[in-house]
Length: 434
Image 1 (cartoon, rainbow, N blue to C red):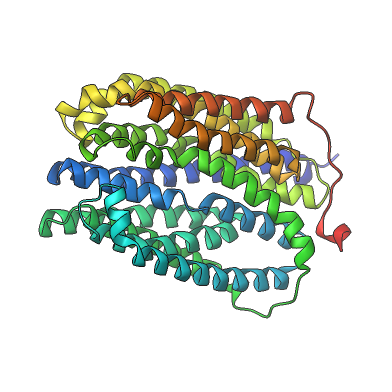
Image 2: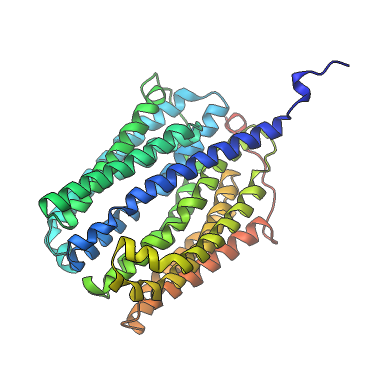
């Protein structure tokens, strides 16, 4: 009996090979872009501690934008509509989102500009310049997830990775020039961030031009909102728990005291550079399979890989944290940073695991978890100022609070993934919804 090419590798093996290849590339690009982003922080040696802490707070302001839910909504809609051949509806969605994002940003930017002096005093910023540079950065930071979500949804991971690398390169290069050559402080480092994010936006917009520049078709807003509202709420709750702690803590500590906290947070969040690409590649593949009522077993691979990589990264940070602190900051910062690293890094592991489970559940339209996530995020938002005000002067307290709530989030996700709340949802593709 002749051997045919169909008898050589199976379709599943090909899919898994593509998954590992794409994930490997995004890991490389995440690490490369992340290291160049981290390369901005040694510039803290050339500026005052108060300027650096101001940079950390302004950076966390951009991190608190709903970038994650925005990107995941467009990743989901792109993957879903491309799977069922409704590209023109996607074109209309992209254009309207682009317009409304710009209008909302304009209204917010005007408000911030009017109250710029009050905000500068409240956040203990050394001057208003960094805040003003942050305003255009906020707009570009909202456009990046929109168009990166489209690239993710169409599984254009090659250029999604390059946008991260070139964005990190632009950030580092511009910040270094402004700080080293012109003596700029937080404003110069934020200008570097603006340059880097702008490069990422330009690449994503250019690579997705065929999906937003062509003819558009109307779409059912009611069905769309039913699909994207749970995604927005779920991923917004996750991002709030991931990125808001620095802004809470900054209100209770001076600029100099915040430096080790910002530094420890930079290293600890670096753990996610390695594990996030697993969920990034998994999400559109599960959405695509779900829309076509196909089986997809990537979740078990991704959740195991995330656990192993997260724990190894945490242990590595505990061991090599002092060396990394000396390289990026200075030897005198080692005691303060390492006092926080175990708490910060430990809190990131359950968060990384929860991220995979949230991506899996929402990609399969299992939205029952969303109300629980929102309630948990609200409780977290109330607990942080309560703990900071009742245990003043202790930077470990907010990190312990983060660890508790991240563990609770992991537990809730596990219950909906494997526990008594886990259930199979009927597949509701766009074809059946129509």
